[in-house]
Length: 169
Image (cartoon, rainbow, N blue to C red; front, side, top):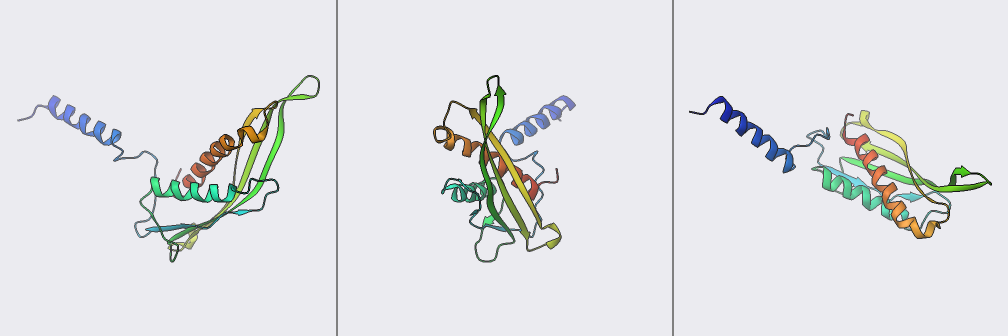
């Protein structure tokens, strides 16, 4: 016969194990049970001065995000949902002006246009732009921070796309 205190500690232990083992997520992912597959079309590059590898980087980042954080399986033949994307802006701008008409920071901004197509439920289709930026010292060249900047921007944009597609938040 278990006491109430023992049951409480066993319940608390079970919750702790489930939480730390990743068996439960507080992300609020909401994917219909009938939706099993996805496809990410190669991003297009519609931005001037964008790195030539940027479309491939973003395509692979979105595929990986969905693969690792959902139960969906990649299918390029007849997917249940599809993502189509384009890099529409890639720009460096001066930020944080200082006296003497100099700037302390430069900002790399990347904007993507995403189309989400749900073949199971067309009422869930959407198109939206996603943008994020990375600040770096004005004395530093873009080429010296570009890989780090693109990674940081990509991580945030993929998170935003994933949340828009798969959560109700």
